[in-house]
Image (cartoon, rainbow over the protein chains, first blue to last red):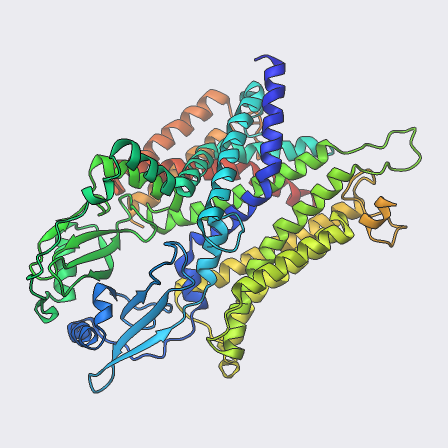
Length: 547
Length: 90
């Protein structure tokens, strides 16, 4: 391949990478955590105070809830298994009429149970914003709300990311075979960071291509659908999928005549033997279009959504209405579309694949971090033998190094602080205070500010120790809850919740190792580097370099 | 996780290790395995692993799991070598 072509692609790769690297670090770090969104929700949820109801008593619960709260009939959920983040067996949500589909801030949550006398007891509750907020960070590259404009920002980032992937492969092609698996750690730091970047980038390329393409489609899908509707369906696409309206005379149906939840679950399991139901979503149950979606997962099949798929059943007759979204029973067309969702959201293969995605997500975050370090290292002004002192490094590399340290470690610190703060604030102030966003952005911007104020070299080790400490505080908070329940803190004993604590502990250990290795490098590293802290200077690096 | 899934993932892991160790850029051994036998062994283990996964799940799912597992292993194996090297030097 002609070297001038390679040079052009290298330039494209460099600039698209630099423009999007830090945003993608946040998307991938938060995305890796979002793989375990449900365990995070379970970890942060306070202990349930509502009386549990058995599945056998669920028909009474449904009937009495519908009688006393008719607004729940439109769409309510019956959970088949207990979990810390589910305050009661039955729940429903009311969304504001003018709210964005992805905006959860205005949604009201209700949970219903039966008291000892059999009367229905309904509580409005406020689930922690934490898991949803981490997902939002992942969806919109660190922006606070999942709105249309923010998704478009993500779409542009995803498009640039795709461009960076293509150009990166072209740049690597001439040495692809020779350098495959090469990770040369030594005095040549540029070579080391290049290898560290390429190993992950080239081997997990299919994963990144899928992420880039699906993220772009997720960001622009509303626009794509609208365009498709106008160009192909003359604006009638929506009406084509609407079932005919029931006549005005259509009678209201009596929910007491519905099949029991257990009978509906049995029907779903007979229809699809490998399918494991987790909840029943009842829709329009008092009207002529009543339907129950039996949600669940099948590890052996591809699920159309992160939480699995569903079988649609008529709750009165038990007739299967649709298996279009049932894992393992989809048509080829639906399976192709579902595969894109599943490949983005790890909705196949069960928990083993979730762990694989978690590590690949972290590896992706490392890919962007190492890309920035490579950019900085490539532009290092080297000290020659003729130079008595180390040269002052370029301003752009100093700023890029500070931004990389501040943004990436700020994201880690912010998420850890938001997790810990979620529990402590609930213990101290009750459910009315949820400062997830405030805590995250306070830590995030404080880290960035500190990194720019004192420079990358002086800030990176303290920030790594801060990230380590805040991440270690996650299991310590649970430990405090277990040892001192009077403090108002709590610790759940489920594997899902313990998994969050153990993973955070492992993360804290990893950050401690990184802090020690980085400190060693700064102490013993070359003086002609943005990562060098001159022993004689006490003033902040940024200030000293500007003078 | 059923026995087929476990054995499929394990066979793929061994296959990836064999292919990595047969690479001239491997850092686990003083000298790499002979290229052809190492890659052939790795290939056979990957085929067996893929077949085992195919027994445990639908073909599309097995293909996705197989590809995801390979990407993860081939990304991590060179880093494990660096960690082993760092441990040795300490």
